[in-house]
Length: 184
Image (cartoon, rainbow, N blue to C red; front, side, top):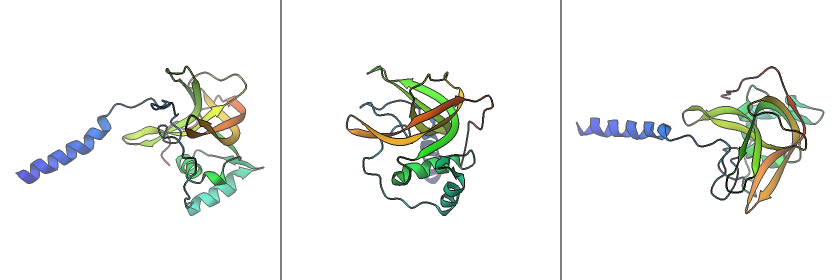
């Protein structure tokens, strides 16, 4: 009987983590930092050294045309994760990808932050986000528009934290939407 109760309690604790309320995917934490990558934790100033998965070496080489690294729908999450884990290989490089345009205004400062994302794996299925914050001198599209963005990956500082964003060269609204939910 005690074993059954312990097993039931363990299952309930495991399942209760998924019942936590979802946070705003573009929310800033208490110090104002944008959720980039995990959309909640700032990027460390000195990125850790990581080992690239062999398949991504092949993808990067194949998907880099005229110096532009294209992040494709297939293995979208894997390529985004590779960029975050090996920043030194990507900072200053031009990236191109498609996704959902979204924005968030931080109430404490009134500052608006914009990003191009796709929904990816998270705690409870596809409740995570993959993509980058973007900055652009032109007019921004409407919320939830499907866009293609091309820009240079840069790191910037806000307060005591560093963040990644794409400084865009182009931001184009597309008529045909790709996969909004990606798992790999």
